[in-house]
Image 1 (tube, rainbow, N blue to C red):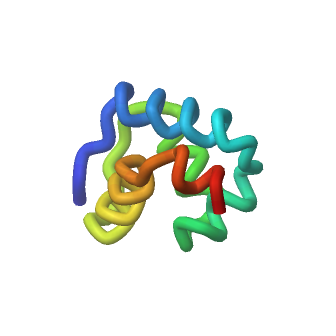
Image 2: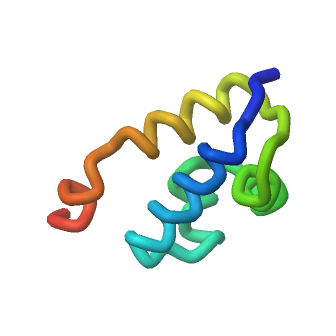
Length: 69
């Protein structure tokens, strides 16, 4: 299990908002459940390493490139 921080939660919420993604759409993109996303967006928690990696990779992707596709 990996530690998810409050700062990461904030980054996730901001990026989802910037891209105008619904929670359901982001869950589909990240292949996670809505309960997991709710935990990730609400603050510090422990998550599976596989989810941790997927979400961090998504956070690291260029928002500009996503918007241009």
